[in-house]
Length: 262
Ligand code: LIP
Image (cartoon, rainbow, N blue to C red; front, side, top):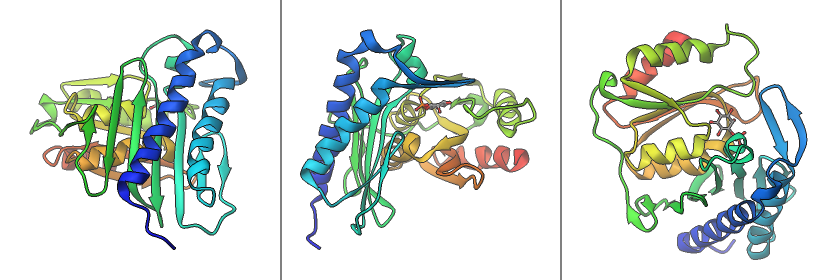
């Protein structure tokens, strides 16, 4: 198997995220076209269109690679390379005309992420990293905050689309975060929350019942920016997990909250 350079992989991730993100941006007038509506979620026509655009870029360059996307999975090949795609993360923000959405593309080799890009079209932000380079925002190096105490921290979180009752663990986690952190924020886009942690525009991220495609690229970018990323898989949700991400000072505090709530 020929070795693919990290810069080549990252360039393709950027191209794929950019093409998908720009398609969603150009078609905002169609942002309400839904294929399915759920109690706490929506599936958009543009979700699938953007997934296909990202896939087309990737498979055009690497036809033998595998794809794991929010809208589609194609893992027929024996290739150890897999591209993880969230065509529109922050779907409900996008469909409601809010700017906090993005397209996230990561590539992993034998389940280890090598490169990733998160493109937020309405913010004009490209978050990028590969395994041998630091995390960057629009080409400039970024790093996590140095906040040392939870009571001085701002932590991003979310309420899962799977929430069915107030006894769900994430409501208890939400309460614990609200009591122990200076501020919590629900911005509705896991990938941008993690990128905000990476750039120091917030101190931590903590969410349960979140999917691999939501956090793969952005969690990797946060790690390359100096964050500690803890993933706790949830067996009851395929590709679902509880995800914690913060700087080295706050990780024990967030882990303690998680341990109390599970
Ligand atoms: C969203 C996540 C967000 C979470 C929402 C939803 P989507 O992903 O980014 O953090 O709280 O429930 O899962 O559905 O917009 O791709």
